[in-house]
Length: 367
Ligand code: RAM
Image (tube, rainbow, N blue to C red; front, side, top):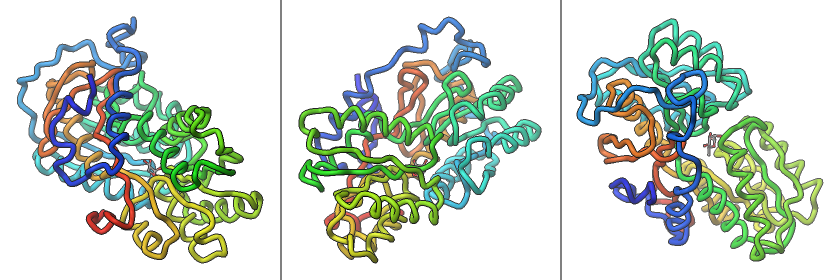
């Protein structure tokens, strides 16, 4: 039943989740959602996810595929790590790797890049969508031109991509963010969220789960007083963190579900009088967060290995372009060193559970 159990190798790369309950949460939550098979417009690229073609799991992976990656923005260390994983996959696949993208994560910033990739007749476009809908018309033009579309990290609307490589289940990530906050605050007091852009599919989905989690009795002592947006821009995130602390003097925690936001928040808090008094948690890369864990500003945050998302997206794209999969639930493919994956509901492929980082384990990670 769980997507995680359907594939081997999640723990092989050393990403051992600290919170045992999290693995369970991730596994359970992978079972939800609707099945693509029930959609009437299946096979129509303008309205329905997977193509009408039949998958041939034994089809050989094609060599020479042109696989392009379009992350949310290029000047984000997280995107660089993701793209590095994608490049590793394309090299193994003997394909042609390309990386393009905007410098800001605004809603429509990716459209012109998609149009260029269509003109270049790429075989696969991997995209971390800045907005689920703004990219849709161009992505469907790409699909009409025979290009396979793999959303990764941040989904596009499901009727305009073939599959979505999700870092962990949305439910599991939202639950982790709230459980870390509860642990750090003792479950009491005002909390705030400092997110990426207001349109980001991934952050908005995680925040929606957090809001549901906060309604549970065990979280009743925590009050979400504000959600603000740093737009995945370091300076804006820094200022938003400062603004939150000035506006809400009783704030007990800032939760930032973005690697840009949490690093900027930690930097601000570490040099302020709030250090040690206001908890900072969320999703960050170990290399960006290490100094703030060492100086006592941050004691717990989470993430997955971004390189594995890019790598998995590369292999998913090659499997689509080679006819091994079409994006339908239940199809399987092998993603190189990561092992076998099964496509879940709505074309979703889940990488694996996130890892929680603390002072005890952070030095085991280098990304
Ligand atoms: C930022 C981006 C990315 C997200 C991570 C956690 O780097 O918003 O999409 O997955 O944070």
